[in-house]
Image 1 (cartoon, rainbow, N blue to C red):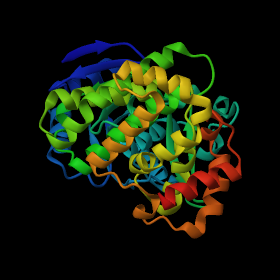
Image 2 (image 1 turned 135 degrees about the horizontal axis):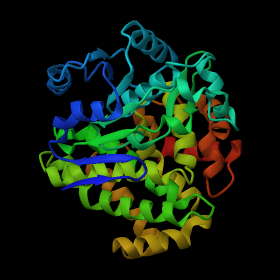
Image 3 (image 1 turned 180 degrees about the horizontal axis):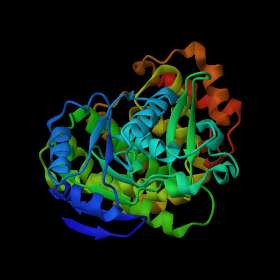
Length: 381
């Protein structure tokens, strides 16, 4: 399974293609890449081997790995300092969603004069940026979930307010994305499940978001089919390279589709992750059936069509039953309580969810009463 795609950016897809990383740097004009990854991945042999490939080709590659699982503004600031200190001219964002997001934002902020929060995805704030100050990025995902490798934004937590903020600019899209499913073979089953459910949440919320965007709908529907086909295999038989490849494709498809919008899953998952430091994909997976049920009156006809495409009987009920059964099979908790979320924070989370940019894409308008009701149901089960 191999391919070169040009949608939504240049994508080099296929097992073993990490061997091309130095050539891709040359094609992008990068001579001194800063390889950005997270602290948990920094000691992995595939990071060392990638640095060796770069250095063997004469590239001045260095490593930056001071990144939390839910990255904070200080991680970006430290990364920008390392980028400037090393006189780097591009970023290789290498890892899961956290590393990809931070890598892209480091490249973005490397040539900006204003504070990072001035470029939050609010209105036309992105126009404040100097496009000439945005360094090129090569994105190399090592999980199949966020799809950040084909996205134009990074999600960073503002520690001062415990709020996840989206930093956006059209030129933050990586110049090249290298999708090598072999890099996901060592991902443990629980992380394979959590990241895979994140891919599903992206496709599903994009498909259900209101508005006319049939291209996004088509990408989302096929992404959901790939998840249904491949995620259980990737979790239970992690060495299956074909299942890993299909999930890697589904992850990129989810992020491509959600330019149409997201919804209640992400609107709630963002503040829950910011306040309780929960894994983003796992939080989306827990919330999924509760948000689907809340939105039922607005999305039932669409889900009926989706169920038919997937070969599921029973329309909306059949689709919801499949989601619940797959969650159970993958070991996904059924309630937020199992993620150690404090019910005493319900009011805070509900209010933060309404203010989250994802809330605008929910099929039914979200107010504090609605997000509180979803939160309470997800706590109780």
